[in-house]
Amino acid sequence: MRARTAAVIAVLLLAPVTACGSGGDKADPAACKAAMTKQLKDAAKGSTAENERPAACNGVDDKTVQKFVGEIMESEIGKQVDDTLNSATAQP
Image (cartoon, rainbow, N blue to C red; front, top):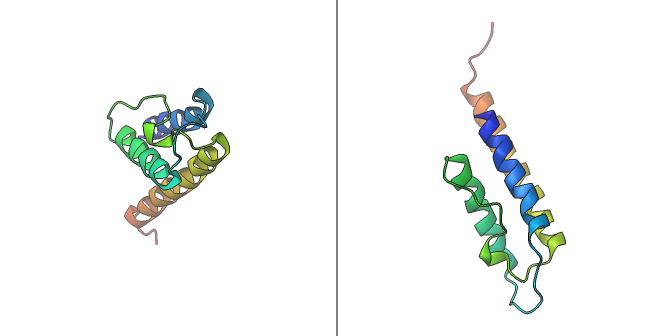
């Protein structure tokens, strides 16, 4: 599970670097972040994750996409930590 999570993190961290934002497209940052979150969740489930920026991110600048990567990873890692702590058995 940790190897898969690390692979997903790598995919998302590389996504902003491997694609250039095009200024001609209408940017929709909210749709971009939602698509990136879905891409992470699909990859974590074992679905094939592409090492590409989602189409919804066309027109969104790299700095914003990188910000989204950080926010998404913080949220998802926080959820995993909470799940792990909640499922741990109490030690006397």
